Length: 511
Image 1 (cartoon, helix red, strand yellow):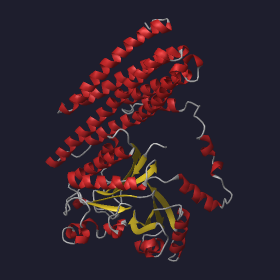
Image 2 (cartoon, rainbow, N blue to C red):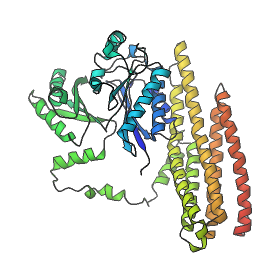
Image 3 (tube, rainbow, N blue to C red):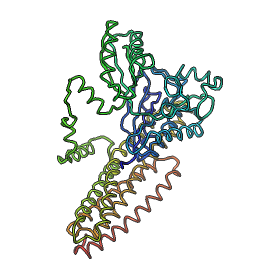
Image 4 (spheres, rainbow, N blue to C red):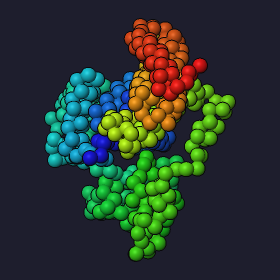
């Protein structure tokens, strides 16, 4: 059974203030188990799409934090852009990736919608698979008239009553939350500035007006060029190549052609492969013929990853820095634990510890993956702090928002290395057990793993303390410092135990 993974692709009504988008992204990354996969902003649309994934509960929490941050920093009364919108967080869909069903994503959408309505006082509509009414399945029905119309109609017209939250729209507008299958956001630009042509082509393409199934389309003017903006909701049933060719034929009716196209966010690899197969007419094509597909099945052996990270670390840039280096050292410590456990498993001499070493190997591999991810998380957390400091500081409200954003980002920048310290302490415990009962020929490797993890814990501690010390109000950081001191004391005891094991079992002194 694969680990449960959910994808979330919220759309925010902001792109022209990157410092605001930085804070929203930081809110997502403040949940340690969630990975931010993509960030795409369009200045004409004045819209940003974030893509992140992780365990269901963690993704749900990250989505809430992002919606909360967006509601504090984005005022729909001041917002302009080409793309239709009704909220600061305009839409927030959940997509099942592995080990999660669509009904479970519907439950996530409903829980989040209720929480956003109660805690943030934002009206929430449910859509797609989570819709409570047939007319609310389609997003365009909920966006009818956009934010401006919603302000006038909510609380007056019962059809516009939200599923959760107040029947009144504030500066953050309303948010649409739901569950759906993977979607491709794909825009085609025509070689004309006549937006009327784009609207006619969009009408011919979209399913709601007689076009292709699983295609939604709008005609817009973007960057001085007519654009057909599409969402393909099922690329297996309606391939992207079919949609492009219909646009090409419809546009030719008006004497124009395709200038270029763009993706918004991410696209499944199969969708691109299917398009290539169609255009190249590779009727007998097998996906196993893709060179990279074969290569990626093989373990990496060229060592390129480490020098690349070391080059970044040595560059005259503030990130990645000591926190990322500490996480990397911890990952190396976990790797050595895996090595020793692997060298113990299957050896007759250590049969009595076989089951225990299997468990140690599984846990050390999980820790190695977490610590490797923390390398990037630490650098991203630092960038978020810098983004908070770049927020405007003119009016009293701006000063308040900036100060709150700095505190949130700084606490997150302390939380990431604290999580690293916790992981490294566990690596030390596993390494000690490997030194105690594992393959004697690898006892020095177990000791090296413990020592690497201890160094990583120390480096992480420095980064926790420097971030807490920079806070004006240090009280939120006190529990973190208390936890860190406990980790330090336990680590010191583990080092002492290792010294005795090396003398008694290894026959040498570590000093």
